[in-house]
Amino acid sequence: MEIETWYQRYFESQLKGRYIQWNHLDPIVQEFPDKFRIETLGHSVKGQKIVSITVGNGPKKVLAWSQMHGNESTTTKALFDFFAFISQEDVHQVAIETFLNTYTFCVIPILNPDGAATYTRENANGIDLNRDAKKLSQPESKLLRVLFDNFQPDLCLNLHDQRTLYCLPSGKSASISFLSPAADETRSRTKARKVAMEHISSMAGMLAVHLPGGVGRYDDTFNDNCVGDTFQSLKVPTILFEAGHYPGDYEREATRKYIFYAFLELFGLYPWNDQLPQHIPYHHIPKNEKRCRDIILRNARYGNSKGTVDIAIQFEERLEDDGILMVPRVDAIGNLSNYIGHREIDVEGVKILLNSHENVFEGEKVSMIVNKNAENQVFFKDSFDVF
Image (tube, rainbow, N blue to C red):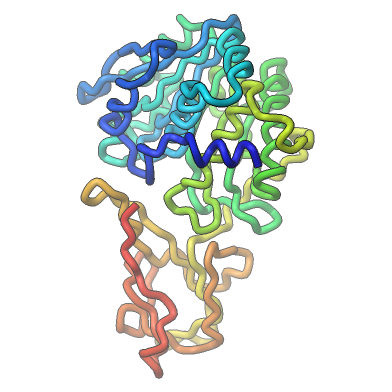
């Protein structure tokens, strides 16, 4: 495919893995061409600068922010892939020039630089910035709101990652999810919501070509503490992006590519001669279900358990040596037939040893799971991968 070939050649290769902080972005930003306008908007709780990147001079104004949650970096990588596309001068120059004359795209690549540095969801004061839209108690929240009020966007993009817990009714992983947030408690279809829904329908239809069955719709329960809900209630169309798990892709390198494709479609830059997309009505996009786990052992016996049980293991993400350590822990024990594992291991009724002992406890860190009666039969061994 044309777009796949381009992506492999031009994506922002200096950004990889899950741990992205401002120190990783700054050298790239310093090399941006003059068409990009860089501005320091303010500072975080710990005094780190918060920067906006603006490109284009068109009448349609789009505001985007990423890493509001510091440990959600996939959309930041996709934004820089998009910037790389705008910067190159080899392909699609007419489309790029049209974009620059049509849109003014203002981006905060890392709204929560303190959380990004420590790989935490919250900011340095322990506050979830996406629950601070009403109180505006944090400098980062105030900064975003001031920019929103001054820039007066026609469209907002609220960019996040979602955990591997989410899948779709089909059982497939929700690799990307979208939401047109509610603007009130009745979830009425306001004019702004409808605009966001139409954009989402177009992006979901395009992604169906590349990511069939992997796009979901997020829950739209109204919460006026959330930034997206607040901006939607202020009559500005707002789209929530949730970058999720693609099978085997814990670094989220595949997912970033599909988010990038969505940006191209949103801004009219997707090469339509690649493949014609479908149009998927917003409410036909399947809703997310929170019933996936990283690993599920099926039909296991342990200790004095009666009969067989399933054991779910979930990775805990931990910052270590400038990388992310994926620490497996027991998440649930019992009949987990309604749950789906990104990896499933059927031990066929064998009695297991977990970390060399017979008992299994929720929350326990998992190093190794073996057959009690044949310890050379290893069902799981933690590789302690750092991304």
